Image (cartoon, rainbow, N blue to C red; front, side, top):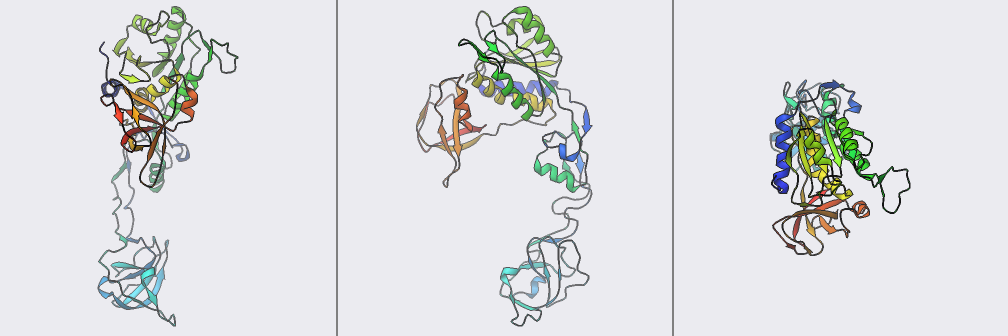
Length: 402
């Protein structure tokens, strides 16, 4: 198989999963439990938003043609009530933010731009002019009754939850979450609660993947560690293929005991790629056995985490029902010079912080793909493009927040 670039490999994952996925069944959940789920049914506005023209400022509802000038205040209206009368020429109604605009008024003057009569006898004066519609949200300007305000495939965040509540949807229909099997491989791995010998490591990859899978909207299922033996690996791979997606950590390099690709091939796997021009994470396998997708993620912790975020996360999100999966790249100014050897897209630990002149990006010193402490000190990954070898301090560089 050809070795793919970062962009080619990501496009391959998205295209293959979108073309073959079967959406999960839908279920209804309580609104307070809906955050992070993926909407399964269209949501329509049950009325105009706003349902009536309303003020967006504290001030006075007036005729625009009457200002600047002196006006007689004939009452007030607060949010949650209506003004019973009508605003005539030369008149004003004191109005609060969110209150319905009284009949007859066509503009709002901010309270800061008004002078009250010295005797507070119900008169005001303003030296400001006003355009018709000033500081008024017309009825239906945000959404009209029957309009689709949320579409299937939308992941529900706090704004979407507010929208559901606003239209009276107390139990939205969401897709059931896919189950993702997590399989670590290697004789060197011991349980988290164990005491490793100097040649062993604790099973950290599975637990970082648990967090990543949950954040992507799926249910992780931890399988026992597969030892570096063919039959043990085959048995556990078969168990993993009973779920919606299989993530295997380790065993995908070219070593004598890297058995994952051999086992998958014996199941009749179709391999889409087995190497990507990135660091960390070059030996990355993606394919399908019958109707189930799988990833063979490299076993070094940083490689596992990075390749999940770049590739497997997209598959999880799409299988969970999302309409699309995007990476939240941004740009930041480097605080120091950076160089690397061209040919690979590198995603290396870095710290991203805000500053008056724009976001700043500082590389974190690290010692390779096994350096978990460096990852804990970072809040982002700098992205060094494969075809450029040098950036100077102050230049913009791509960055992917963790």
